[in-house]
Amino acid sequence: MSLDSDIGLVGTGVAPLVAARHLVTQGYSVLLLNPDTDFFLEDSELSLDPLWPMDKNTVSLDRLLSCSAERAVDELRPSFPGMVEVWSGSSGIAESADYHDPDAPHVRQRSRLWIAPRENNQSTNKEYWASIEEMYVEVFDRGLNPKTLEGLLAARRFPGFSLQSDRISQKTENLRGVQIPKFSDVDVTRYRNGILGFVRERLGPDRVVCGATQIEIIPEGIRFHARGVPRTARLKEGALIFWTPRLTNWILAESKRWEAKPVMPRGLRFFEQWSIMSREPLDCTVIGTYGDLTAWAEVEGTPSSEQTRLAVLRAGELRAVGVENVLELGLDWASADSFNVLAGFCNDFLNWERFSIRAMRPKAIFEWKNNNLSWSLGQLGQHGRFGKISHKVKVIGGCDGPLVNVVGRARAACEDIEKWRSA
Image (tube, rainbow, N blue to C red; front, side, top):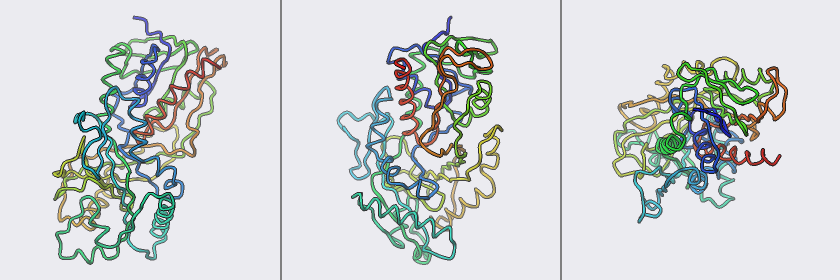
């Protein structure tokens, strides 16, 4: 069977699937190559924006506004082959309740709460709280109704916080918080699986190739091995490469082969997403942040009053990106330091006597210097060391991190293809 196509897509995760979905519905023939044995082994999408690190760039008003449920729905619905539902923490019911699909991916609207101890002699704590105060002023001026909370009033709003202790007042009297309404999180798993099922059904098994190896951009298209057999596909329009950490070594090697200068990310941020059993039912209407930890009630679909699994996202350090295997940089995931931080969070802040870990998922997410995340690996008619390229090849950055952003960038990359034809 010939694999010649209009567009070739290379990547792992949800971004190439979103692109395939859009291109197929527009009448393009598509070949999708994934170097992993499954699309979500890398697991580089997040259900929400961690808004980390706490600095002026991260907590800018534009970024805060981009976390709204309205924006999430606007980005996700056009790319999903089905319904995307909405759950509001204030009303407790889904949008369009008469036609509500409980098994569809949900966008949940929740408040966002930042809690920190009062200023002390630690400069990092002062800088952290200064960023929160500046954020408060900006959202207040915009009419977003932020609230300031003190002591126990702040702590008891944090998901998972327990009031069952004789030392509550001593633990909470030095705390203060800022709460902002109408942030969102998304059912990542349901969304990814829904798009994957659609793309596999529309393209068929021959055109969705997992475990592709020795992928090479060649002048007339793309060459690769599937199940140990060499294959070549001609590409009429070009190729889109979706850059996640998994593809770093290959993208940098191909850039060198074609004498292209890549747009490099600022660094690679490591995250650990822990799933912990709460000792009591959780408040599903709030996403809480304490230091570098962000916690929320972990749920799919519409939350119930009996939610007891707490998701805790821990932000790690930012590391430089080089030619080494970036996944090897995360070998210190779930280290002794990780467990100490988690134990301190559960015992000293949430006020739990003990806690039970159900799972931990490591994630590596690129951070970028600006919004210029895409670049051309090859231009039409460009002469590289391996010949004259007959199609365009574009590398798309920002294909990991918050799911809403990933979906938006993948769809925008597809819209650029029409510009290729008119250029």
